[in-house]
Image 1 (cartoon, rainbow, N blue to C red):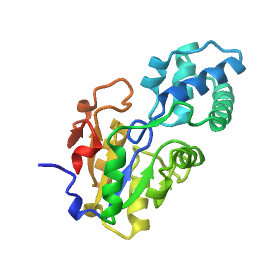
Image 2 (tube, one colour):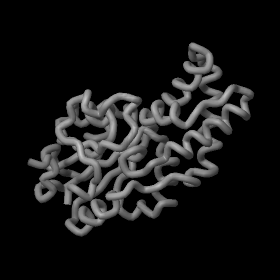
Image 3 (cartoon, rainbow, N blue to C red):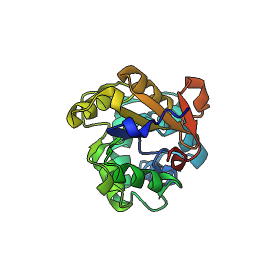
Length: 221
């Protein structure tokens, strides 16, 4: 039995990176450009794919931890601001919408289900990607990691969308790709489906006991 129950949903919340778009190649590119700029050693795309998914600040922390064995607050600030600037200049060189996403977004739109994007990426970068990939028209609400006082896995960003939309948690569905999404949804009391192809910090998505895992979002329609 699918968790989706789309006929009884008013609101679907989506994570961005690893769920709607494969952005790791551009994050990797921007990270190495930033590291070179600061005179630090570079990292591999495989490493970045393990570290992404918890927001830009956490990505920078993971990189510094790997390079220096510790995270120096000043270096962290320097790397983060450099990275956000570099990344903002070219958000979508290699970033693509995953297969199966558009049919699902079209289905929700046709059936008047409101869609929100809830990501830990800084809001202006998330909106930039949605604009470039022409996904913006689908999303009534975009919440970034810096939009509210808390970010996923805290339930606040999810509950904030429910409140904005004037609906209930029972009529809301979360779709993500990581333990962060599963935990946020669980704490918010919202059903959650995860995709098998995203970024989950190098761990199996099954470890966090999601309610349902799908290979393509199109399967849900």
